[in-house]
Image 1: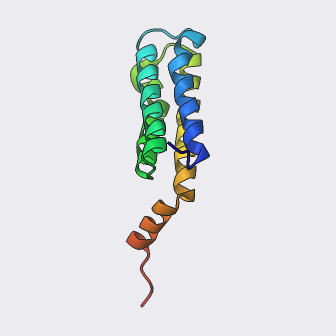
Image 2 (image 1 turned 45 degrees about the horizontal axis):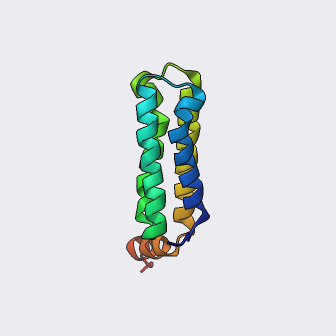
Image 3 (image 1 turned 90 degrees about the horizontal axis):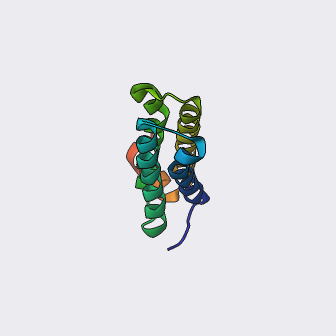
Length: 120
């Protein structure tokens, strides 16, 4: 198991925060279980990146980040702390995933091969 990108380790820490944030922030209701589930998902993708390095897990992380940003309004979180934690964590996961994609050689090669068309 080897860390190729520091962004994966940072995403793992965000996932750990999401799992632990429920009792720390005093969350209740649906916010608890959704935050834990999304946090475990982020952790799973981050650990998967350590075991089977690929650019594909970043897309999964970014989708979970989008879910974290949108869920406070779709579910209706009662606490402002739950909303702030979810939105900030989601934006951070999206940022880390996007950053990793822009620096990943495998993804850059795939993107170039797929979308680069020489003129003429």
